[in-house]
Length: 214
Length: 99
Image (tube, rainbow over all chains, first blue to last red; front, side):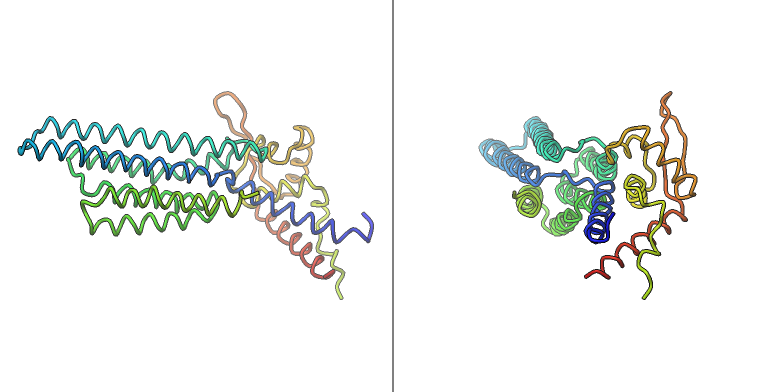
């Protein structure tokens, strides 16, 4: 090492250190496109759900003018299936775009940062999922949309320690929308579409713009 | 004026040792394989540097098992953390001194 290039070497060394600290403690392959795709699937799902509820179920109900419990059970099964399909589609697309990004970065998708991220996201998410199933068990549908939004928001805030910190703001917004939804029972589907659809798309576009544009 | 190089730690002259420390200070505990993957080095090379860091009392080694496979993990000691911070401060001072 000669006197002349020492400042550059030192600067490079500090940059390397910072990069390693960042890379080793946070999962940074999460793609903005994942958010956009998940948001689009959520909006499509909400649209289909609205159609199933208002055009099919309520239309038949109004024609007949009496409550048919079989129809109601059918509606619940349809909506449950729809929710599962939306979740699967969103998860697979999120996985695909993140896999593509980590590939182009030459990183492995399955390392200790992604394991830690998944685990810390899973704690609030699985808790929320079981809580919501419990509410369904007692046929209390009123707080399902708010609970989805709030637990998901908490999961994101928790996850923000292990990936881009920006995701924390998405988490805050989800929690706020969930809490507002508590005061507007019956409009859950619209809040759900706002939280899982619109917010995901906005977040995805911002993240893509910020980190992946080139 | 104090010579800016005095704060630099000889042990961290090597890029791999410095890399190991950079990773360990931000992670509670990390396995040999994760270190190898992130630093892109060979087993033998990494092992040598880990031994020297351990001998200096900068890192702790935990030997464990996952099933039958050995799973060795490493964590930074309080001494190691202090040595690393001092080294970084010295590096930063050097850069500031140049500007």
